[in-house]
Length: 415
Length: 209
Ligand SMILES: Nc1ncnc2c1ncn2[C@@H]1O[C@H](COP(=O)(O)OP(=O)(O)O)[C@@H](O)[C@H]1O
Ligand SMILES: [Mg+2]
Image 1: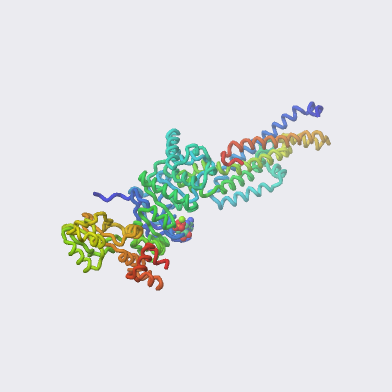
Image 2: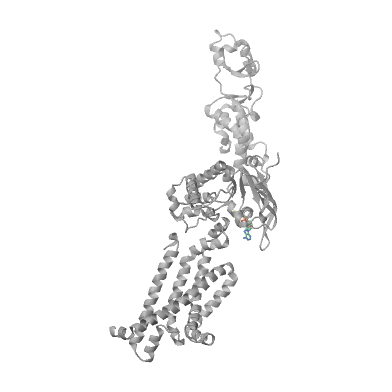
């Protein structure tokens, strides 16, 4: 299969402003159809410059930009812009035009008949859940959030496949902002749009993007998926931009149960006698045994309590096996499993593979180790203060273990 | 009063008409020249300073002197008067057009361009409508100047209500002076009111004060 042609491709693009100010340099970037690309970086890092070269609002000083494989320099700038949706931070609704007129600016430029424009405008306001009678209002009669909704649909009204958004939600309050993030993400997924979104807010980028392009001083520092960015930040700059909190959380987010489970759970088959069961418990110093069949499929468990009460009546392990047992798949994320174990108060959880075969066990003690490692392990950069380390360490003292673990992974940070 | 109207009534009407006619042509030409020029100048800010400077200078030439200067070029009569008044009308219109256009939020111009409007479409659909109240204020100001100064045009034989007033001055007939001055004032007020109506209709609904 031939490699899919990128929708937008930057080839060694450079932009030098008058006066010799180099805004961006050596920009190589591919944006594929259906991606949600966030350009992120500090102020002045060249995000806006990069974006505005796509619709020829700025001309590169060097290099080449392709739109659907065609050099944008060979496309009439006006025609190009009518194919690309454009949303700016200040919204830029025309104050002297009604909402209807605003939404249909590009369709009108493209000479759509009135009827088709009217239909499209209605469809668009429905899409963002605004009443149709808003079409006859003026922008000043709408709230900031409503205005930006109109700003977004105005960029979609001529069926543009590519939408450029330059910090579109910067000026909105957090609640409106969240609603609009939801909106653009839904629209992008539902309508299969490609979005290039400039932001300086990492939360926003992580929430929306399928591809994050980190910029600094006019260069692309890292171009990665959100997960890659969190798990493998390219350098210190990206780490700082992402923030330690998120990196720590991310490590917990991607750790699977398999990575932290104990691999030799105490297990027994149903055919064994109760005497053998007790001797195994004694040997392994546990009060519970997992029960598996000959193929190692998890069947249930037996505990000391039932062993004691039914020792007279039962003969084999199978007779006293309790089959209702909570277990997790080895590929489950640690973070979810930890939540469950801690909230439900399990002392341990068996781990199975995709065939229901027993492969390990997670205990509260192993959880504490895991949480500890994800926060302070591996990377010495994250040396915690000594006091925090000490209080989280004594995993073998029951009370300390329980309280440290019960507060989830945040706990050691708070002591 | 009635006696005055009886003797001078028909003269009054012709002279008022002449005044209106001279003023309207001068103002019309002023609008036709100064509005596009003002718009054009917003694209060349450096030239704009020079051009507006020159227009301001012309404005300071005393009106009688300017009228007199027209004689060697255009002789006497209505043509030199119209040319002189046209020159006077330029500055307020030019300056207001320039300021009005410059005052349009650059974000909106950027948005218009970003959506794929040509420069012309942006000017017609976005910039001029938004600048309209300021442009119209310039035109109304020019209209009042031109109507008032058209009175002086009688000096170079252009006719108009100035004929009545200057006759009155020469013959020591105060009723002629008053009879000539009142129609000038009324004319200015009526034209300003009419232009106000025009402004209202040209201004986008949302921008009306
Ligand atoms: N019109 C301009 N003229 C000169 N320098 C500019 C212009 N626009 C931006 N710059 C400079 O280019 C660099 C990148 O700017 P920009 O792309 O706006 O960054 P960002 O959007 O990431 O904040 C900055 O150093 C900025 O000062
Ligand atoms: Mg920017």
